[in-house]
Every structure is written in structure tokens, then in C-alpha cells.
Image 1 (spheres, rainbow, N blue to C red):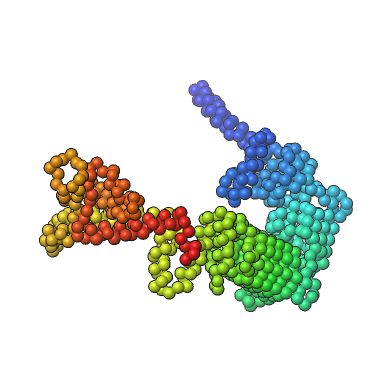
Image 2: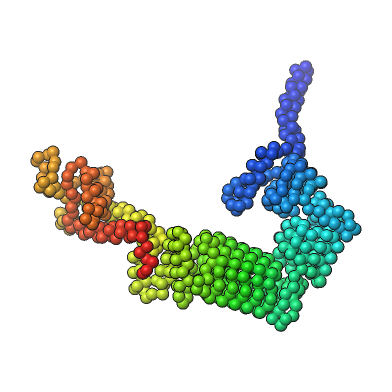
Length: 591
């Protein structure tokens, strides 16, 4: 009995020791973790790199349960950071960039930064805004059974950051949201009647179902001079989206020909196949707008924000894009004929198969389009003048790679316009071998590929006896081995009369025999000598290779091997010359 009791006590003690660390760890998980200033600075720096590199470098900031009381986060970019249950009491959040889904569980009491005012004149702090959004989200998720609907009618939310906030069905009547950041916020079925949205940033996908009647902020004009309000614009975009979704069965296509939509907010709007001929979109916000196959011929897009917009197959002929921002935009097969591109920015824009024929001397910002994607795939219809002009600008700016890319684009387009025979010859001679100078090292790579290919042929010919023996074993008809070897040829070691060698009995000409690994080495060496057999004056690589030999002799062939060696020499000489010309010069610029 005592032994059993002792065993039970020991077991309980062991279990206690095993459970204690786990309990302690769980306790630590629920506590806030204090970040030292240096550690926090490093974390934020890594997070900035992570955002700037599109998640390729750096590391996402994980500040879950972090103690950030009193931290100075002025102008820090905290988008996509994990701030779940973070303690930000008294922190400086002035001009801090963040998204509300990351902040809803944080503690923002006493945080410095933005503040507004409710309709009853009570101060509305960041913490009050967080509590309101949190309760509203709960109200939505519980189908109106828990939490509370956000009622911010008549409130002053000027300059508020509501990025990615869920305000669907919220009461925002008469709310002052001038200059507010509503990017990617969900405003579906929100009541925004009489709200002030002047200079506010919002996306149309989340606003198409909102009520914008009487909303202040922007107004434009149709070609008929009729005033266009935000609600009119919403209805037009809503009807156009329905027209697209029902394959033209319902709704109505957006036709804003000649309308004045200057400085309009069309952020994220779907204007696929819309007609915008001659439309004034001066300094309009078209960030992430879908303009696929849209007709924008003659439109004024000067100063417009077209970052990340999709302009695939859009018609921008005769359009004015002076100073427009097209960074990260998609311009696949976009028509740029007669377009004014003066000072337009094309950083990381995709111009695959874009028809590039802008107005003469109306070039985009050179160091912007230099980093556009697929500039070597741009095309033209009537004249390559635009591409030639852009290539010259790259040349003057020392942008050699981009210069080569445009040379390829021009010559490739010319080849496609030529006849079958000429096109095939140009492809084999220049496009496949070096892409008209765009791939200057490709001839060198092909030279070694050819060398390896012919080496295999030489090895097969040298060991034809093995092949004949195998054919005999398989009882296949075999020709006279001597006759076969005579036709295929042999490799001979030839010594000159004035050559120096130690063996006095060595013959001037003797056949080279090899077996096993030596056959492979001989085939490779003979292929190397054949590749560099030809030279010009003192520039003869074959002679330089021969000097490496321990004895003074040269390898020569007869029969088929000699013919193959001659063909290899010609091909190799062409590839070597092509490499030297394309790497050190510009042989295709004037062709």
C-alpha cells in the first residue's frame, strides 16, 4: 500500500513538472511583449522593405500582443502588419498609414493623431472610431442581432483614415468626409446622402450600391452640358457593370463621349468597352480602373492617375497623356497611334504588343519607360519612327539594354512583314542566333552547342567498328568494314617537316587510333580544333589551341569527317563573328 501511494505521489509530481512549463508558456502568450526601441525600429524597417518589394524582401511586421504604449509611429506604414491585441495607448499615430482590419483588435486609448467630432459636438477619437467599426462589424456578422450599426450621420470625419473599413449599411448622411481615405472600404448600401466627399479617396467597386444622392464633392458635365453628379456617375457605372455581366442583355453601356470628367474619381471603376471618345479626364483618378477595350481616342488624360489600370486593347489614338502616371499599368495591345506621351511615366508598365506610334518628339519620361516590361515586344502598324526615336533617346541616355530591346522590336516587326523566304532566312541568320543583338552571348552558347554536336558525330565515326560488330551480332546485313571506313573517313596526325619531336622514328603522317575514354577526348578535341580552324591574320584561335599540345602536329581528316569538319568551321566562324559584332557594336541599327 505504501509502495502504491509513493508511486502515485511520484507520478503526480512528474505530471506537475511537465505541465508547469506549458502553463507558464500559455501565460506568456497572453501577456503583451515589450519591444525595445531599437528592436521596433528594425522590425518597422524590415516591414517597409517587405511592402516596397511586394513581399519579396524584408519581413512582415508581427506585432501581435505587442506593448507599443507611447511609441512614435509618426508617418510609419503599418499596412498588412499584424497588430492583433497590440497595446497602442498613447502612441503617436499622426499620419500613420494603416488598414482597419489590422487595427480592430488593438487598444488605441489616448493614441495621438486624428480626431473628429460627432453630431452632438463630442470629440471622436481614434479609439472611438475603432470601437464603432468593431461594433458595426459584429452587427453585420451576426445579421443585426449583436453589436451596433454605425451611425455617424452629421459627424465631422474630415481627413479620417477609413482604409479597408467595412461601412456597408452604415448611416453616413450628411457626414463630412472631406479628404478622407476610403480606399478599398466597403460602402455597399451605405447611406451617403448629402455627405461631403470632396477630395475623398474611395473605390467604385465598394461604392456602387451606396446611396450618393445629394453627395457633395465632385461634378462634371456631359457633352450636352448637363451637370453630372457623383450619384449620376454611380448610376452610369452601375448600369455599365450590369451590361457587362449580362452580356449586353440588361443595363446600358457607358457612353461618355465628349464629357467633362476632369479630376473625377474613377478609382477601381469598371469601364471595360466604354466609349470615352474626346472625354476630358484631366487629372482624373483612374487608379486600378478597368479600361480594357475602352475607346479613349482623342481623350484628354493629361496628369491622370492611371497606376495599375488595365488598358489592354484600349484605343488611345490621338489621346493626350501629357504627364500621365501609368506606373504598373497594363497596356497589352494598346493603340498608341498619334498619342501625346510627353513626360508620361511608365515605370513597370506592361507594354506587351502595344502599337507604339506616338506623335513625333512627344516622348514619355525616358527613365520611366526604360523600366517598362516587354518593350522588346512593342509593335507598329505604319512606321517604326516612334520606336526609332525612343531607341535614340535610350542611346543618348546610356541605356544600352533598352536600346537593344527596341532594335529587336523594330527588326522583329520588319521580319514579320517580309515574305516567307526572306522571313525564314532572317530568322535563322539573325533572330534565332542573337535576336538582332538583344542576346549577344547566344552565338557563343550556340558555338559550344554546335561543338558538342559535331563531337558526338566524330566519336560515332571513330568507333564505327563497334557499330559494325553489333550489327553482326544482330545478324543484320553489313557492308565491307574497310569500304565503310574509307567512305566515313579517318583522322590523321600530320607532322610538318620542320616540326620538332623527340621520337626520331615517328612518321610524318599516321592514323589516330583510340579506344574507350580516349575516343571521347579525341572527338571533343578534334571538334574544338575544327570550330576554331579559321582565323584572320594573327587572330587564329586554332593555332593558339595547337600550341597547348605537348607535340608539334596537326589533326587532319579524310572522307565524311573532313566534310563535317569544314561545315563546322563555317558555322563556328559565323557564330564567333556574330558574337563579336553584337557584343562590341551595333550591327543592326542601320539595317
